[in-house]
Length: 226
Image 1 (cartoon, one colour):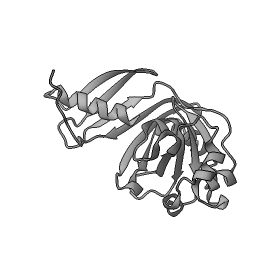
Image 2: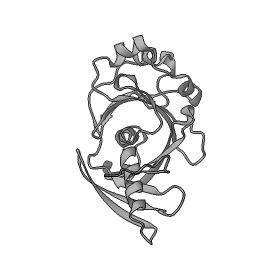
Image 3: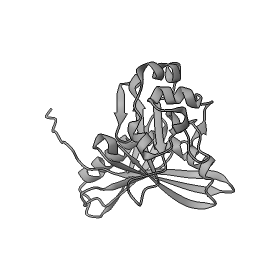
Image 4: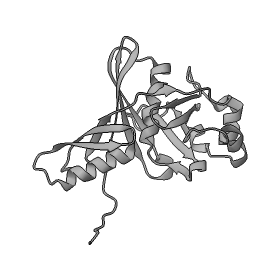
């Protein structure tokens, strides 16, 4: 997910290329990942890669009242339009929880007691809570990711969750044939805004290819002397 984006941008910039694009090939646990990097000499290069594994649904999500208790919300605030809670994985499993509005998303927070009841025996990495009321006009979804059991109270950008979210988009939004793009806002409530681009290629009602992309900026640097 986002570590691949950041690593690829760092490696591409370290190569000091004269051009503005580069191809970085990484070997990850899930397989070979080829990452295209562009805008290399700008303040925030953009990296994008095809998912090595397409998302698949992995069992049932907890009921709305259980999820609401885990997030400090009301059961009536879980879900919007035809979106319902689901569990998907594209390498890392997540529980995807739609909520009614951005205001509800802002109030969401892990309830330690309720969280154990909803996710205590769950192998999912965390809860990806989302709504269809983004802040920016060019975005499509607003999201937060909580994984307290994994030591992550909240994550500002979760590329692996965005990858699995492709399954949610396909199931509920039912995009037609061809390429489609969805921009996901995350980390805004933390003061660390991130924009994740999810691209989907549909054919015959099926997801053929999915890509994750985003921009990365350096926040620190160091040097190791041997």
